[in-house]
Length: 260
Image (cartoon, rainbow, N blue to C red; front, top):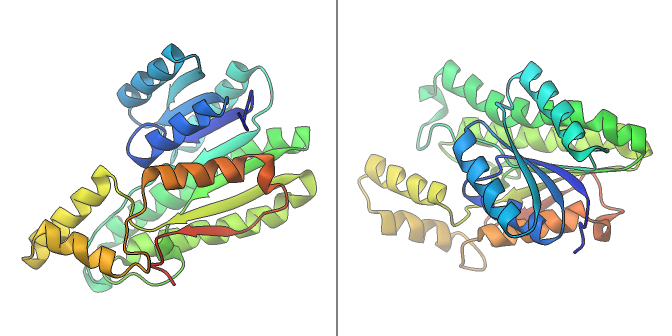
């Protein structure tokens, strides 16, 4: 129970990797506010967690909208009746795939940056003052291994993940004197419905098969195995607890060796 009674906001809390992270945080004893743009999945997950004895509340919020994020963080503080101690930014989008940079529209590019960078920045902006006030905080941003190296035909996605990396490092410098740790996890391909959709869309565009696209990803990994959502959840817990008390402004790359 490394996070017993810690007050945690998690965005992108229910679907795919986010759901696994949320369940692991609950198992570690955290008090949770689950945030997502769509109410149904987070409400269902909150009920599941409460039935298992966890403390969980769902708040519907689009994390790209300034005023809504401000209100969400304020509501979370009221629910906790105490400080916001940990923020996990797991919300994000994939954007165009198998698309060279000259074929990406400005609207597609801007939309993806807004979802992945602004959607990470705004929860940080409004949660950090509570952490400063109480001289304690942990922020874990979910980036991507394509923020470590280039990713062909994914210029928008890769750019957004590099942006999260820069935001994480700079915010860590801003906040260090207040005992706030800010780090990023950079997953490669993760075994989720999003990966399946990605492989199927790539196969359709390229005229290959799902199996071929999946195998191509695996072949690029030193360990020859795909990362699981639980791999990411375990890392989130580590960076959220005091086992990582002297780590800040860093990226934990979890990609099976894809980015080596």
